[in-house]
Length: 166
Image 1 (cartoon, rainbow, N blue to C red):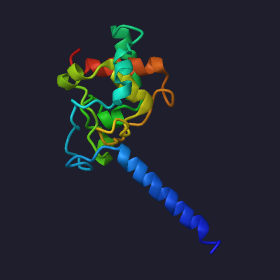
Image 2: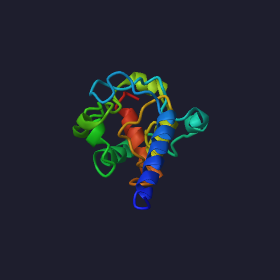
Image 3: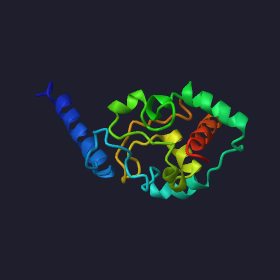
């Protein structure tokens, strides 16, 4: 009996985690797990309580040609953004094929009209793992603070914005 107790406890803990995790997550949309396109761009990835603060975030510099050139180097290099979002930012990178939802298409002007740079920075810092309860988790992991500095994150974001014509 004692030999089975740790396994039983692990099962109870795993079940509790699944229940808690499942209740805080959005219901997966139709087609989730299929390369069927971007999930609804009208729904923010930032939790509602954190949305005003995220929207208020602003880059510390302007999108000058020099900053955009640095952002492109980061996007195509150590930021590895191109792996999922594609070299032209269309959401069609090589890794996109294995993600549950197609990565953001940064050439879509509708996306840029709906989402602020601050919201995008929040996602770079926190990932998009279903925290809002409205959007299922995606393959977007936290990048800023893990692999990139905040300054480099802003440069990459300004470059991404330039792909949509801004």
